[in-house]
Image 1 (cartoon, rainbow, N blue to C red):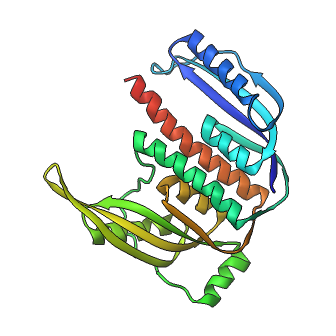
Image 2 (image 1 turned 135 degrees about the vertical axis):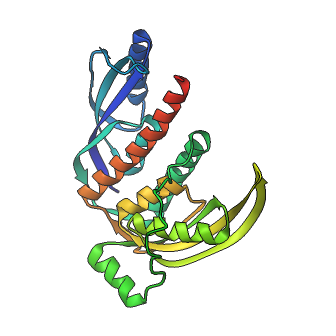
Length: 266
């Protein structure tokens, strides 16, 4: 079990000063009831900003100890602007437990993206070369042992103009994220007309090798409907990997929450 001592910086924004004060107070009270050991909290004074959409802002600083699964749940629930990991007790997590954590991230982020839009947005990928698909066992073993990569399988749903374009763009996007593709298969699930244009839905299954950070990012961006870790059976996570993974996750949650706030203020 990995246990963390960390600090969250949670921001509340709005156009009503009293509402911002109330919001941050309620967040503080809710955090004190969570399944973590609160070590201290500090609320900054509400300040007036130059942003016409969010005139007032304040930040709550919360320092606490908790198990990795509980800390990740709080990242998803409260969307901190900043996550700082101060201390890590333990470095290993069973693959089965990690899959459970990833499934929770996938379900939560999938729900947010259904409401506020996808996170999987990329620049034009047409100029990028098509990445290699398929590695021999010696290459895979080298990635796992020397680079600390994880071998895992995802099943996702994807939409686009046609099967070939979706497959090509997905392979390039995965490579751009830092993943190595070992297997890639897809199945056409649905073909519909939308605003006079043909759209298709694919079910895509792929086996990837990547760092733990990339695994977290892809889980949050694509909200896979299926996740399996092939190897190793026990995953080692360094403090730096934990910091990067939680920071990336918090950033993506924040982006979706910010979209919601902008929609409310339009």
